[in-house]
Length: 488
Image (cartoon, rainbow, N blue to C red; front, side, top):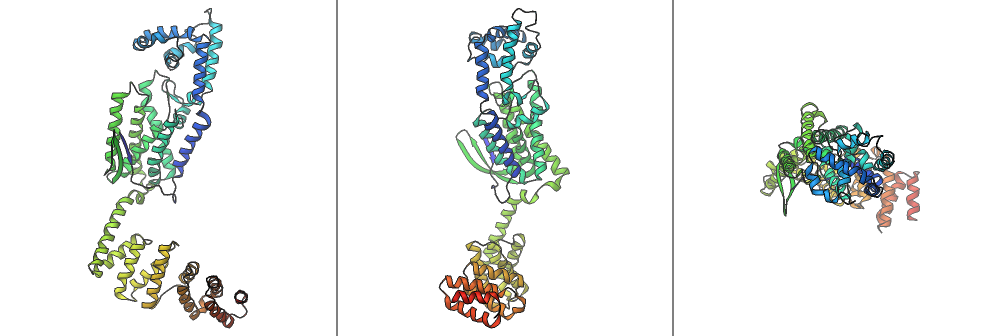
């Protein structure tokens, strides 16, 4: 069963830097340091059997297993004890009790005739193991080290293991990161990874089997996600055997689903699977806990706008549709306050701005009419749709109202119109600026720019008119000389 949130889009205007860095570290560690570790383990196994070390140690290990009560393994694999492909070598290396006694020279002692021969060969195997980043820095429940609590989170057993974890890290991590302070997010990621290990260790305290992977910390992020979004409804994707779909539920339900599924897998499959379900359970619980503590005591570090974005979008769409419905029914007096409310919420939304302007024309030259026009004319985007909206509004506003424009806004508009080859609108502004020439010191520069564009567009006559004005109003300006050269 696969359950993953699918409620937010990754927006590169505000990238999840910490998540991307974590992914990069995991990828670099695997492909730069771990990639050949399987070959090193194969080398250790090959040497172990070919050197005769297996013939020395494995019979002793077999006796130790019987004493430990692990007769099930002995019965299943005793016929293959001399085969290099059998699991005896790895089973022995991960048996804490036997390996501690072996390494401490309590099983083969200095008084044994084979001690010297055994000692050198065992030392060589140990050296091969030390060259493996995976073996050295993974978490071993029987011998945990402070470093391995962190390092195991950045190690993976295979490309598929890495790819699966990184996809989940990106899918959940970027949402959690953008929901809070980034430093707190990084701390929480590491904290849940450590907690996932702490829950696992007591269950395998006699084992040296390497535990590795980011899945515990990622489970922590999933627990955080569920608590941070809490009762907010989120859209998520689920896949059960061959059936998949999208559904929308309160986020906190995901915590119960995730946790229940991991507990079920721990009960049913932990004996047969190499997946560390306990680490997942520990991550989910610790992630939910730390998110609860953050919400309760450090709410100032939570990005409430981001958490409420989906709900706000739905509410905005509802109000916009309602306002448009009023317009359709010619109930402009009801639509006008709704559009004003929508523009207050999202000053850059073109659809809301257009409705606000149209309904404000119920009272031409009112403050609402001027505010609505100014809001559209002040838009900063330069895409074709925005340019068209600005041009249409400008023409309508200039023809129906006593224009109220600031010097700053006029300067921005003339630049937009010149860049967009909106010569008719630029001309209207130039006439406006000529009437108030004392306020527009850059008028000669604008005339030069628009003249240059007009000549390139084949509208030479209009450029000549501007040159004539420059000659009369600014005879000594360098822009006047440049226009003359342009038209020569």
